Image: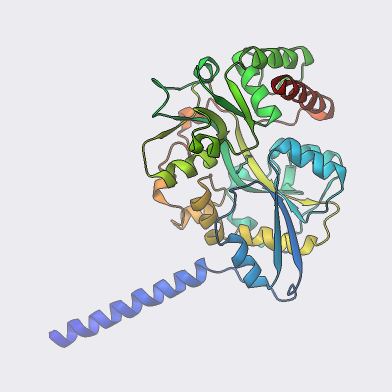
Length: 363
Ligand code: N2P
């Protein structure tokens, strides 16, 4: 009896450890192909958008050096890529910007003979209207624009854009032309993707008329302003706010998806037409789409993962999957809208109008 149980125990232990090793191999499955040693990859992306080991692991696995350059807004990304001054191998624009860059010939087609991990991406995120057939882009992470406030200072609750605009105390907006103007268009009863110059102009007037409490336009660092106590309320990208809420392990900060609805977005990996090392960029894209790498990334950044294989394998933290700020429930999603490509002319108009707003607020 005793021996039988010992033997059974050994067999079970062996089986468990073999399964664990197999799972490890499957999970930690990304291995860099040889031939890149000594090369450099130049990435142009957002801040707080990789896990601590995402870049070091890639560098180590490939024997390469990664230079990670940050931009603060889609507007800035567009200006830099259009200028052609800096040459990046990989950029991470939001969806409408992919359409603009493609239209202007500023991206190059992806090489799916390298990016085989595209098979891990959820079908919901493939073949999007802004890049039919995913010729130029694959999804990186997704999220929403939301509001967070310091509950130790704010009296009562903030639950809507209306509350934000009426709040009596220092507020920061996010530096993103389309996002902020879409909120005003929404509140005015217009299409958040309006191409009508009169409506966009009205949206500008609306924002300016509700800007008395605006103390800063945050270049996607509103969360730091909130943390420092410089602002009571900020508009920011969901994950950036949820990261500080999680780190703080306190009840000081509240994240809100505004009740009127908000912008839901997908950021995408794309290779600029003038990239110096497009092949290494394709390898990096393939690496990011590995289930374990993608899961580590999303677990760290508190953004939504487009990696269905990671979700199916249980690699995304349960706490994230159950957090309505990261994976909003259907009825909340119903009120959200994507920012679509409005075409070159309207796009230019949004940029001009936003620049006018920035100038007026800095007076
Ligand atoms: C991460 C920013 C997310 C980008 N810091 C919003 N599209």
